[in-house]
Amino acid sequence: MEDPRVCDGSNMNNALFKSERLLCSSEVLDSLWITNSSPSFHGSTSMVNFENAESSFFTQIDKQENGNDDYDGSFHQSEKKRRLAPDQVQFLEKSFEVENKLEPERKLQLAKELGLQPRQVAIWFQNRRARYKTKNLEKEYDSLKQSYDKLKADYDSHFKENEKLKNEVRLLREKLLSMDKAKRKPEPLDNAEPKKPKLSHVSPIIPDASSVKSFGARPFRLFSR
DNA sequence: TTGTGTTTTACGACCTC
DNA sequence: GAGGTCGTAAAACACAA
Image 1 (cartoon, chains in turn green, red, blue):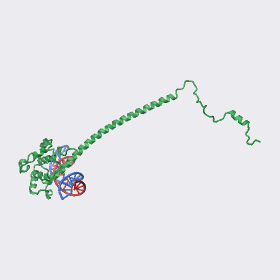
Image 2 (cartoon, chains in turn blue, orange, cyan):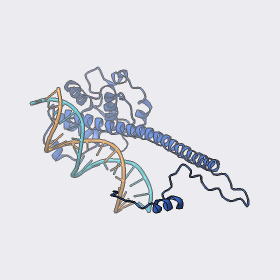
Image 3 (cartoon, chains in turn yellow, brown, green):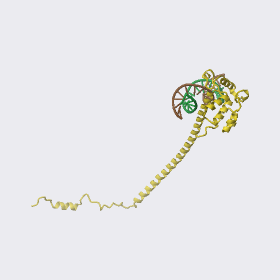
C-alpha cells in the first residue's frame, strides 16, 4: 500500500500548495505550526490569496469564538455550508500528509490554529481519508486493468499460436494418411485383370459336386441287420 | 444567465476497538 | 463511548451553451 501521507494534489485551486506539495515530510508541517501564542490564521494579515472564498474565513473564526471547544449543535442548522479558506485547506493538507489519523489533541490544536470547530477538523479528515481511499482505489484499478490487458494479450497470442499448431498437425496427419493409403493400394497396371484374393485358407461353405454325389450313392441306413 | 456536472462540507447510521 | 468508515444530502463551484 502507498503511504497515506502522500500529496495527491486534491487542492487544485491553490498554486502555493501545488508548489509545496512535493515536500511530504513532517518538517513541512512543523514549519507551519506557529509556536507563539497567536493563532496563525487569526487576523487579516494571514489572509492571502482567498480568491472566491473571501468571506468564509471570517465567518468560521466568528463561529469558533462564539462557540465552545467542540461541536456546537446550533452551528449547522443556523449557518449555510461554507467552504474552508484555501489557507485552511492547505494547512489541513500538510497535516494530513504527516498523519492521516487525527488524535484528539491534534484535532483541538488544528482547530485552534485554523479558527475552526474541532468537529469541522474531524469531518475534514474523514472526508480527506475518503478522497484518498477513492483515489487509491482508482490507482489500484488502473494497475489491475493494465495487468489484465497484458494477460489477455498474452492469452490471445498463445491461443492463435495454438490454433496455428493444431492446424499444422491436422494437415500433417492428413498427409500421412494419404501416404499410407498409397502404400497399401498400389495403382493397377493397364489391361490387367484385377487379382482375386486368395481364399485357400478359407473353408468352403458350399460342398463341391463330387462330395455331394458320393454321399447320394450310398443311401444312409440307420438300422442295418 | 442558466443548466449541469463535480467537488466539498456535513451528517446519520453503523462498525470496531 | 470515541472515533472510524460508508453513503448521501446539499451547498459551493466550474464551465459550456
